[in-house]
Image 1 (cartoon, helix red, strand yellow):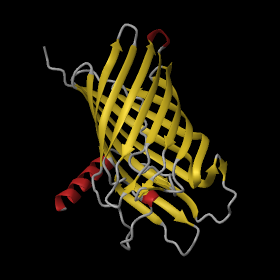
Image 2 (cartoon, rainbow, N blue to C red; image 1 turned 45 degrees about the vertical axis):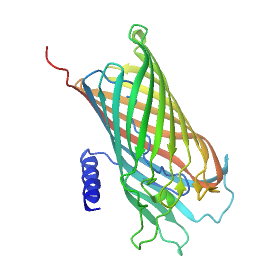
Image 3 (cartoon, rainbow, N blue to C red; image 1 turned 90 degrees about the horizontal axis):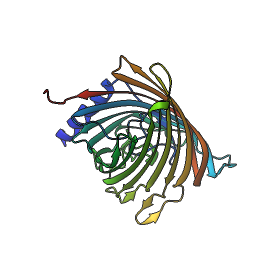
Image 4 (cartoon, rainbow, N blue to C red; image 1 turned 90 degrees about the vertical axis):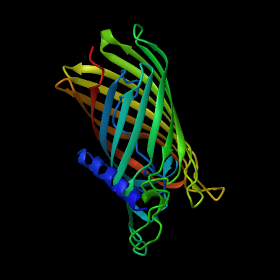
Length: 320
């Protein structure tokens, strides 16, 4: 237990030292449980003997309830708003020209749910999110045609199996918890096409996440995400990116029974700009705008989020 606590604190400190953090408050499934989406378009293979580091900060805010695809007309909502601050790091290493290894970790600085009802207390969680280790393999890589098809498979794991508790010892509300506290797996499929003459890249990224049950027999729903990206050089050292992301989240399950106010279909439009510093560092800023929401039951939904990321490649190729 002592070593586990020290390990979690060490990882949290490293993430905080990266200089980026994210905040999000929410109820129902307005807040991510696990690890929020990052802020980088570096999703393909990494060159052999190259280490890519990506660190990011994300903030998200929610304050409107939805029933189905429309705002809820119910005026007795218990929650005022929700938000979180999250900081994450990704490490990728090119083991061969076709195999890339990846590891992800993240830390919720806070994850707050604010209540109108004075009888209830606010819930504020913080701590390590789920981690991921993954292997990506280039099924088809053609440098001449600038086409890449890459598949990935990975393991999701909690840094603690114990669900987070409030200061009074009670279990935190689900959306205030930083982790699912359960193991799971993830898979991805990337289809990418570059156009060097146009300084443009297009790609589609599909990701699937499956979560197991925690020690309280609670299982977070499956998540299927499909993202369409178009990246274009717009000026010297500047790149513009637009993304349309489609998320389908299945219902959560408690003791074998589906939870009522869980599950959703969400579409998000994301403009992004990247700047290359000294040919080494890549700084990216993005802003998420939900364009379609369809929620099961009544749930507090995200209004916006923004993120910033910093990435760099380090070459460890042996000298000739």
